[in-house]
Picture 1 (cartoon, rainbow, N blue to C red):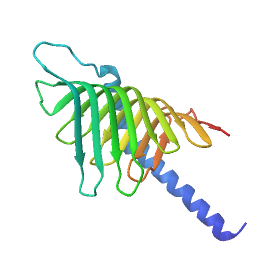
Picture 2 (picture 1 turned 120 degrees about the vertical axis):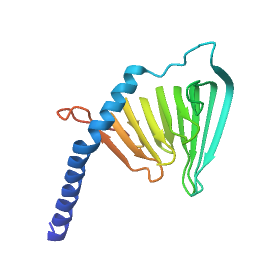
Picture 3 (picture 1 turned 30 degrees about the vertical axis):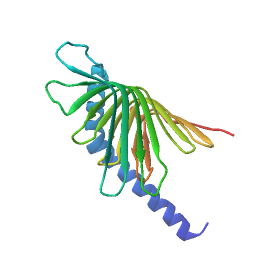
Length: 194
């Protein structure tokens, strides 16, 4: 093998290793705590008389780059304590990226912040974009940061690959994806398909 190729491969592994160390030292602790807290609380829509219900909602927003985010739900309840927050049922969301393919997100429940467009999808979350499908139980999505963090029973299906993992971070604009297991002793299950 050529010395250049070997050095390049070693540098790539070194960069991946340093990134991995950085992630587990600084980022994983906070995201694990948030994910565990959210999973314990399970997003449910409380049916109280002192709240406001809306049927068939549709919100659209866009950023300075020309990307658009559209979210629809069969029913929403406005949080009385914070009117920027809505609890949603039966959600369909689209991320329309300028000069790229759109991304579709569906789930049974969610929590939407109309001020910053952050959305938490839960229960039967499905992300689809051309030739790719990701399913799981929880997705914390930030339109402003173009970042989605998905966790719990993740299954990714692509043209020639299928994998199972505990957590996935997706950069929506670049489609770059980082895949993790919560337990360092377990490995991501990857299967080839025809």
